Length: 245
Image 1 (tube, helix red, strand yellow):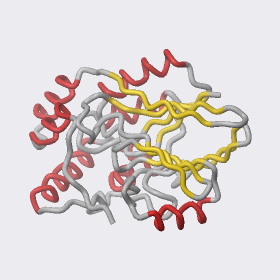
Image 2 (spheres, helix red, strand yellow):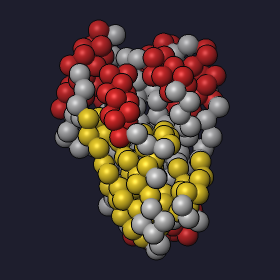
Image 3 (tube, rainbow, N blue to C red):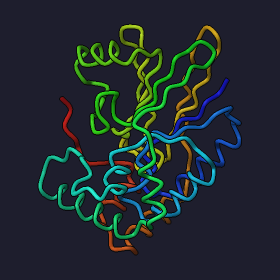
């Protein structure tokens, strides 16, 4: 059985359409999204419409929550005033440019999705089972992963939010971060997602990278008056440094 897991599209319709083409090629049995459809990019409504029209079950990301519920902050852990200012600009622009139907849709997302497939229990969240905003970086303390493994009661925990792919096995739980479709942070501009391949006795994780028209995505960011750094980060596949605790 094959399951495609997307996360952190961030209003990048160019990346999403390229990933969808790859998904059609690999033909998964199921498709899920771990949230953050919007923010930073120039196409919030197109991205929301795409996910909705393709009936992709989606958990709520921090940005979906912030835009859907008109929060004052996106809940992102930025380290310096310039990053905070750019973040606020992005949130305000996204709230102003997401239509009412889109905001209604974002508010419908659950905080988690549980599935059992071929004897494997799956838990899908945006940040962690504890909080939509929690950053589960791969280098978090082992004790943190142990506590989460105990509370999660799952065989596979799939998360996003950090935009950095990894997989690790802690106390009987496989942790998988799916990376980011629309805003990678690992120095590779290509869109990323995970194809989970399940057999009755094993799990294989295929982390897929997909080329897309990053120049068009970056130019749209600039044309819409969003901070130029967002466009440069798309082109470089690089990102601001966040706090890991």
